[in-house]
Amino acid sequence: MPAPHTDPAPTGALNVRPPEAEVLRRRNQRDAVARSKPAGPRFVQVLMAILTPFFLLIAAVRVVASPVFLWIEYYRPGFPGDGYGFSTDDRLTYGSYAVDYLANLAGPRYLGSLVLPSGDHLFNAGEVSHMADVKGVVLSAYGAGIVLLLFFVFAFIGLRKTKGAFVRGLFAGAFVTIGIIIALAVLAALGWEQFFTDFHRIFFANGTWTFRLEDTLIRLFPGQFWVDSALVVGVLVMLVASLLVIFCWPTPRRVARREAVQAAVEPE
Image 1 (cartoon, rainbow, N blue to C red):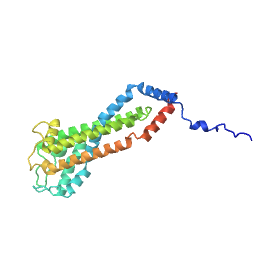
Image 2: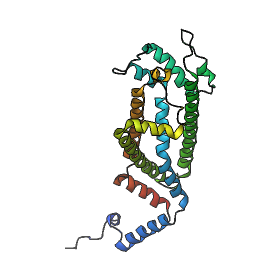
Image 3: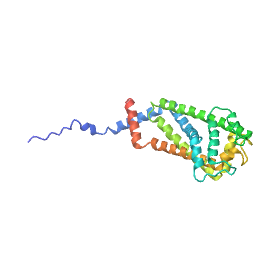
Image 4: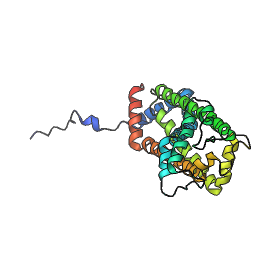
């Protein structure tokens, strides 16, 4: 009786693992290629990690410095009323002028020329001067935000050939952002008044940002407004940073897919 045919099937070799020496050689080759990569992409990743918190903070501030947030804040239950006679509609009308002024290109006259039904000026000279200072800071921040947006666009374009580099930069930036927000939240919780004062001292000269309770700026934007604003900014930034961590997390599947693509384009 003839012996059965024992030759391996033509496709049997596809299931055979390469020799350990070959696996080690390929791994060492990939590591050598990784080490020999130019420092440019890594430098861009470091910049991304540093700049991500600033970009997210500026974006969150832009969301809060809007008539929509003003409306939500004034009409939310529990928001303190004005003890000097402004109705909620008055606050929304006058507060909208102040918020709009921060984002437009008008000069101090935009606020200085506003008058109450009684004929008195809505804002006094000190308030108008402070709002001009605030506007300078806010517009500078918005300008920086545009520059940062362009940086991230060019970083995305420049890092396309380095697989996963842009995602790793965002991933690192998200963790840096979370750390900064946690630190700021702790400082604010330990002493809000001191935190608020120190923040103003960074950007404004002493004596230019303190007002009486009956002044319009305090009536439109009481202390609770700033507590709520800081809380919303922090929550928005933490939310976006957390989403970046989730979607950029280097799971085994994502790493394997990236390595497979990288190996396919690299020479043996």
